[in-house]
Image (cartoon, rainbow over all chains, first blue to last red; front, side, top):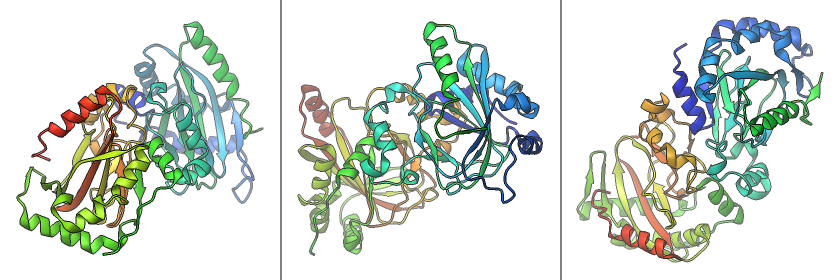
Length: 227
Length: 228
C-alpha cells in the first residue's frame, strides 16, 4: 500500500474522511471468513434488520491485524499527534438506509476505520459525507444540520439526493472518518461491515469525559439489534 | 419571445443557504436556442478578452436584447437573486466565456461582508468528466476552518496527496436550460472540460447594509475584470 500518513491525517482534518484504497487487500479473504464465524446470516443472505456484534476485536484476531497494523498506528499518530487507543469495535450486517447523522459533535476527535466486505457504490449503500461538517467552526451545527436531517421537509430532497460526497468502496479498501462528520448511506441492500474506533490518549478532563461518553454511546444506538 | 417568471421555493432557498449552491433544472428550457444564438452573435460582434483556456466577452447580457430579456428582466435572474439572498439586489456584472480545460479550486474574492450571488448557465450538457461545475457544500460560510485550508485547496497534491479532480466534492451535472446559482465564496472548480464549452454568468450583490459591505462592493465594482 502506498500511503503517506501525514497526507491522510490532513485529509481527515480538512474533509473529515479519507479512503485508503486496498489498505486491507491482503487480509480481505480472512476477514470475510471471520465475519461468517461472528454473524451467521440467513440462508437467503438478508436479515430483516441490522445485526451488530460489539467488541468484534475480541473474537476476530484477523481484524486485530488491521487495528494493530503499523499503517493504522502511523495514521493515528499523524492525526492525534500522540499515542492512541482502540476504544470500540464492531461487526455489522447492515440493511437498508442509514440516515443522515453525526456520531455526536465532540470536542475530542475520534476516528472510525471502516471496512466493507462487499462492494458499495452510489446506489448500493456506499458511505456518503458532507465534507468539513466535522469542524464545529464551519457553521454546520444548528440549523444546517437540522435541515440535512429533516431533508424531506426542509430541503425537498430525498436523503440520497442531498448534495454530498459518495465514497464508493471495494473489499480491501478502508474508509476512515472523524465521527463528528455528517454521514449516511442510501439504497443499500445487505452490506457486511467491520469497524473500530480510535481516540488519542485522553489527557484533559474534557477528553476523558468525551471518551467515556463516546464509549457508552457506541452501545446504546436505538437502531442496533444487540446480539 | 414570451417568458415566464422564474420562481424559487422556500425549500430551494433553504437548500441554497445550507449548501451554498442551487441547481434549477430546466428553467430556461424554452429559450435555449435563442440564448445560444445570442451568445454566438455577441461573440461575432464584440471583442473578446481573456487568457489561456478562456476567451470571453464582459457584460454579455447587456450586449444582446435577447439576453437582457432572458436574464436581466426583473422577474428572471434578479428575482432568483432576491429570493436566495433574502434582500434587494443590484446587478454587478457578468460575462460570456468559452472555456478550454479545467478551472482549479478557488473562491471568487474573499469578501467578509459583501454577499454575492452568481447565476451560471452552460450551453452544452456537462458532467463530471466534461467540465461540470463542482462544489464543496457548505464552504460558502465565512470564517471556520476552510479559511485556514486555502493552501490545501490551492495545491491539493502537495498538502493532501490528491490530484485536484480527486478533491471530494459534489458535481452538478447540467443541461442547457438549467441555471446554477451559487455563492461565489463557495469552493468551486471544474475538470475534464470539453473544448470551447460556453458559459454565461450574471452576478448580483445584496444591497450593502454595512460600511464594510459598501467598501467591498466598491472595490468589487472597480476591479479590473478584463482578464475574466
